[in-house]
Length: 558
Image (cartoon, rainbow, N blue to C red; front, side):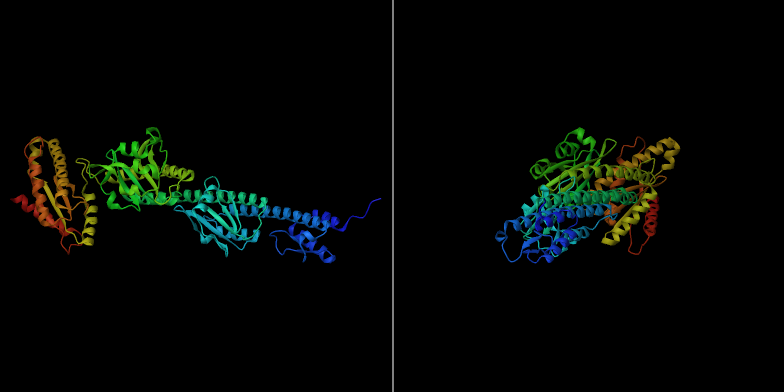
C-alpha cells in the first residue's frame, strides 16, 4: 500500500523537473496562488533567495516548511547560475564575433547589467600607476567608491574581489590586466558559482580586449609604412616613435636614437626637452654595454630590456655633449620610473634604439608591453631599412659623383627651403658662387685627371672651412647648415643661412685663403668668388643667383 505524497514534497518533485528560471518562478507562483495556506512570498527579482516567509521569521516556520523553502531556494539558485552561465558565455561569444575595430564595452556592460540585474557598471583602466574611470564603458548609473592603490593591486593581481558594495572584476587574458569593471551591487550576496563565472568572464573579456589591441596594431602597420615611405628619412623618425608609444601598453613618453658615425644620436622624442637632447650623443659602449646592459648577443638579436627606477640613474651615466664627454646622467633620466629599451636592427646590424618610458609608474611594463615592443622593433627595423634605401636613392640623384657634394638639383631644393625659413623668421640669407681660376689651363697642361683631383680637393677644403665658419659666425643651432654644392664645371655654390652681406664677405675671404693654402698636389689654386644677399622683393631666388653670378664675373676680372 502506498501513501499519498505530501503536498510540499510533490511540489518540490515537480519543480525539480523544470529547466527554466522563468518556468520555475511561474510554476511556484501558481502553486502559492492555489494554496493560500502556504506562508510564502516570492522575491521580485533573481538576486538573493526566491522564496521568503510571509510576515513571519523563517525560524518560526514548521520544520517541514523550513525544509521546503530551503530546497526550493537551492533549486532556484542552481537554475539561476546555469542560466547566467549560458547567457554570459553567449554574450562573450557574441562580443568576440564582432568585426568592429573597437567593440563597444559599453554595449557589453549594458548586457551584463541586465543579466545580473545591477544598478550600474563602471569601466576602469590603469593609467600612469593609478586606476581611472573609463566612462564610455559605463552602463546604468553606477556608484563607484574612491579608487586607491590597493584597487590597482587587485586589478593587476587579476582576482575577482567581492565587497559589501559591489564587485571589482579585472579584465585580464594572457597578460596582466590593465582594465576592470566595477559592478555596483550593494548588499548583494554572491554565490561561489557567481564568483567563478565572473572570473571566467573577466578572462574571456580580457583575451578579447588583447586580441583587439593586437588587431589594431597589425592594421596600423600598413598606414605607418605608407607614411614613412612617403616622407624624408629624417621626417620618418617622429611618427615612428609616436606610433610605438601609442601601441605599447604603459608607455607615456620615449625617444628614438639613430646610429650615426659609430655612435647614437637622438632623432625623435616625445615629452622630453628637445634643448636638453640637442647635441647629445652616445658611444657604442654607452648604449650597448651600459644603458642596454644585456650583452652583445641579446643586443644583436634585438631582445627588449626592461628596467625600473632603481637602476635607471645608474645605467644613464655618461654621454657626449657637442663632442665633449660628460660623466653624468641626463636630467630627464632622473624623472623616469620605468623604461623598455629595444635595439632596432636589420640582418643583425643595429640601426637605432627605441626607449619607451613611464614617468609615473615603476610597474608600468610587463610581458605584454615587452612582446609588443619587440614586435614593433622588428617592424620598425624593416620600415627604417626601406626608408634608408629610399633615402640613399634620393641622395644619389642629388649628389655629384665626382666630389660627393650635393649637386645643382639639391641646391635648388635647399635654396627654396632656406628662403622660406629666412622670410618666416626675418633672417638674412647669403650666397657665394665660386670657380677655379685658370681651370682650363690646368686641364690642358696636366690633363683632365688632374683637373678632377683639383675639384675634389677644393670641394673638401670648402667643406672644412665652412664647418669652422659655422661656429664662428652664427649662434649654435640657428638656421640651416652652411653648405657647399657642386654647381657645375669648375663652379661651386655656397649657401649661408642667417648670414648677412658683411658676414658672407668674411666667409668669402676665409675660404679663399683656405683653398690657396691647401695642399692640392700641384700648382697653387685660386678661387674667384661672387657674393650676394637675398633681397626683400626676390620671391624665387632668381635675383639672388643673378646678383651672385654678376659678382663672380666682376671678381674674375680683377
